[in-house]
Image (cartoon, rainbow, N blue to C red; front, side, top):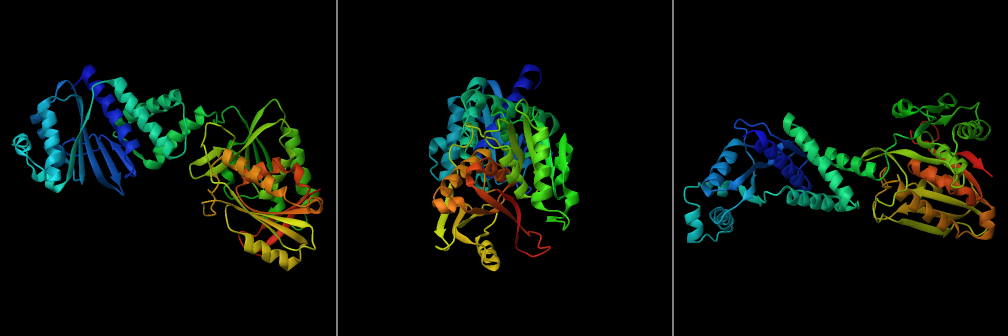
Length: 460
């Protein structure tokens, strides 16, 4: 097979690979031109290193004959050990070929009649006893096949909560096809994680989330994971010399040394004419402080970079993203009717309420109300918040919960204890001008000192 026919065969093979990868969920790697002795496996779906489905794709401008189908199925079966085999034929399927395909279904269901037995004559039916074998028929029509591919992609993206317009879906589908065609020339394979990231990266591009045109700012106050931020950042504030790990050195003070340095850096390196991406390899208190400095009225276009299950992402608001998110669960309770301060406890990455209450009792903080927040239907992990849109929605809910404080409580101090991504704390800081007087706390996560909380930045 060569020339136009060969090129078309590769295109159809790529189309089939995209459709199969999007519609079949029971695999962790898909391989194009899977290597076998007879080279009969065009697409292989693998799970834990073993082939779970071997697929051969055939296309023609003519009609398929039953003898060809029998021959191809037998060759595919003998060429690869798999529990499932699929022959995908693209082209005209006449009555005799359709009868053979239906006869396979009848044999597997134990309902073989004379017509089926006659059609299966000359075919080794023990293959059907030993494996799940099917023939998938598609029309020899590229526009129709592209429509199937778009529909498969739309269904796939809907299953992970993404919503796209027709043109966006078509764009991503054709890009996936191009990827599969390249892999077919190299015998390449793709993991499910790589496919997800491939789709999501194109989705982020369409949603305006590429960061190529943003100026990078980085704030460092501890070293773990800071390498990526250093590489990507054009402007950087390095505070690591003022800390031993996560703990501030005795000769420095959060309010006298850290706060002024952060404020000066932000004010000197941001303006309303430039868009920014913010790398926060730092304490949550500093992330909150930056957000308050760059509050929603600052007019500065800046969004944080957050490490997620899908890699590093720019967390910004986008109406094209997931339609609904897990909502905020609030436990708003009176802790002491004689006191006026409020403790805001954010249990997103970890459940910290018990530790916070132990700290409050240990140091006799004057807490009158506790507002404890978590995310519904999720276990507290680093990935409880799905993206920037979700983060900002949760911030809005926290702001609403804080309005439940009495007038005396609003005039008193808000103590903020958080286990949440830094990007979220940045957003919370941006909305914090109406919180009143605030004190933030840092926890000894590495258990290097007191294994508890210490106050950090106080904002009046």
